[in-house]
Length: 178
Image 1 (cartoon, rainbow, N blue to C red):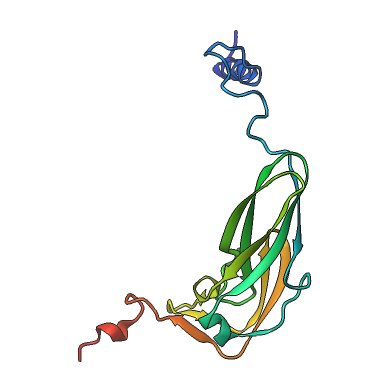
Image 2 (image 1 turned 180 degrees about the vertical axis):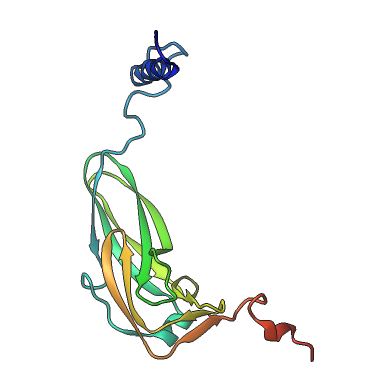
């Protein structure tokens, strides 16, 4: 009469229907539908730089102190909610990862119509690129910084600065017999 696939699909459809329309078979629901979902509407805008730009910074400056990016987060509408601001860096350097790299994050709770300034820091360790030999370096060039979906352009000028030497696996000189 029926193949095993027809029976499987029929059973799956019944299970999905039960899931979508909980009937209390296993007890009362612990939360009402939609509980825990934020219906807040957040807006973001740059706080310390013009949108899309930042002044050029020497590589040597990033090597000794972080560069801060501040964004104003506002709960425009809806109930109180939580917002996670993520900071990403990317570049066209051959050593750069194909995808953008997370460098910092912050989470804030905002009441309805409230706002706050979120500051994320790019450090030498989080902004460095790893070369083929394993050396972590701050390389000059143009980088795209994205903080809470607000984009900045970071121009690092000067010569490359080594942040961390190659690990022992790559650094054969560290194991050379003297």
